Length: 168
Image (cartoon, rainbow, N blue to C red; front, side):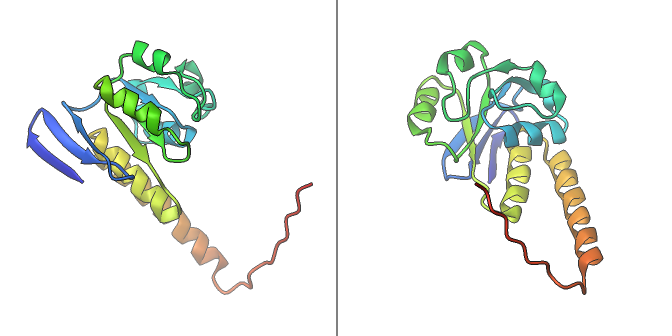
C-alpha cells in the first residue's frame, strides 16, 4: 500500500508487513535476488540498478552491475559502498539481522514474498509501486496474464498429462 505524505516522500508496506519510507523515486537500487533483478529490468528501470547478487545473470545487462554477494549472504559493506536509496530482497533467505542493520543505517529495504503465480503478479505490481513505475509494472503483469490465457485456451479440452520426474 502506498500512502503519500507529499510529493517528495512516500511510505510503503512490503510483502512481509514492514513499513518503509522513500524520499522520492529511487535512483540507486540494489537487488539481492535474481527474481527481483529480472522484474526491475522488465519494468524498464534497469539503469537504476547499481548492485545485484552473484546469481543475477539475466538479462545479460545484469552481469554488468556490481556484485554484492549471494542472496543468502549479501555483503553489507559492498551494499553500503554503492550508496543505494533502495534495497530489494526476497523473503526466501533469513535476512532479519541484515535488514535490521540496513534499517539502522537509514537504507530502505523492501522484501518480496511471492508464493504462487498470483503472488508473483502482486510482487511485480508492488515493486512497480515502490519504484514509482506502476504503469510499467501493470503492463508487464497484463502481458503475462494474456500469455497465460492463450496457453489455457490452447490446452482447453485436452486431457491432463501425468508426469513423474525422478532425480537421482
